[in-house]
Image (cartoon, rainbow, N blue to C red; front, side):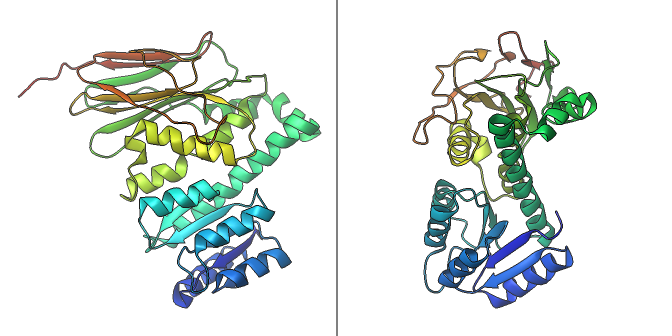
Length: 331
């Protein structure tokens, strides 16, 4: 998005200068502040499209800045860019409403642009959802009448095909062409694979936008995991907690049934958690509260080993199958 207004709140003038120069080269409209109160004042004078904020500022805490800004502009996308790798800082920032968290030093400034574009895309999807739900905007009606566009967007919610890894085959089937579920297979580090199925509870013929918004919540965690900065994806209950917090902060007033697990293809260990009771899985686990209903909901994880077949399905909908094709040996 050209000419998106970006406010950078960063007391390190060298890093601030690098970020400002880089973003201006990409045609962003950039303003900078070196102190928290200055950033708050700039934001009030001219509301930006997105904010980059450090946590350690000379006058006030970055967390206080986030809380102050979101108290008057609750939907404002904020990206934390901080040298702190503390999980407490990350959790506090997300709990307050930060959309993404980047750890300095950045491997590349391109990561910053990717995060900005990701957050702006999520914001646009949420805007589209609100138009869809409350105004029935003509452009949204056109979107759903465009079969080719709907098909392309629906394909973004599904794996490109079966995944074969470490002797396991992960596959899925659909009983309907309607976009009523998001299914994901993501290889992680150390032979682990993330498996996810999600479906909106108030499923309608126009469930596509809520699902696309929900999908955007996973991408920052994937980037942080693959860069070695975060292990949330390896713990299904923590992932559900994170997604639930993000949903409760978002404008998507939709509850989601979610089944998520991590398969270790080396040991055969399967860990999984479930929110909502519409997804039927084998092996079974007691489902917790669906995501997006209550911010303080708790989630638990089940685990087992040496399971050769795992599956989950939605009634009259999608199904996910995990099959061990090559028996493991102790050699």
